[in-house]
Image (cartoon, rainbow, N blue to C red; front, side, top):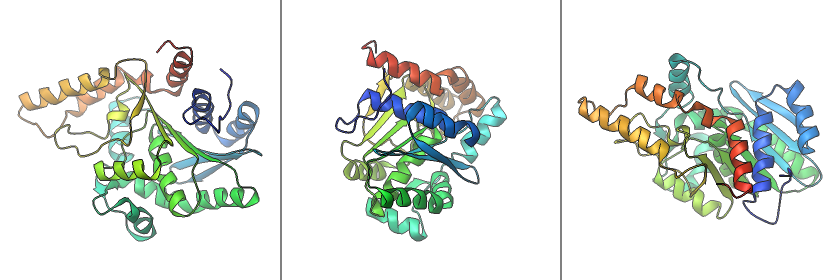
Length: 288
């Protein structure tokens, strides 16, 4: 399948493959990533880094692409705890300050993931400057993408761009966790009708997070998922089993960290960018 952005056909798989390749390149340091963007995607790109948040902003005569770097996948249970608890600070909050102003349009009841909000707030100024400068040079469709944590940040950034009068053409995420509650999800649905494409591997548990508890969890995803490689019940069944085990053990509000880690570890290959690329290729061929 050729790598190209299909501007006049929302959700085209060629666009998905192009943007997923941008996600893969986003994991590389600038010395390797920037040449890769140029050679594979025809984009002049530069890496923006603030603290632990990174994204490439790439552009050519036809498009501007923002590709967020995701989390490095955990190799041990300690790494998983850090990835889940630190990068996925689970509290649902109402943003404050300028963020609060931008997200107020989501509605009174909308609440967002605290960790994602804080990461975006810290990162926003240089990201906005890069995209705004590119748009002022030449107005072109803005595509925003990200894998894993990067997909969550892609959604949040898209919202802020819209509120600050930079129109988003399409948002494409891969294996992304949830970013807010139902009111937040409904707000994204209103703001981006037909513009969000959320790809999920059926065996990937990360899109079911954050969920220390399946019982008290109030997170939800925005819009329907684009399912790859299965029925969509595989990851749900695994987490449901863990939840039932917690109830049986007399601790219904918390999933055992060890069990959750083992559940994720057994399926971590399905969260990798390489797996998503293979799934997109299969879907394009009509095999899934």
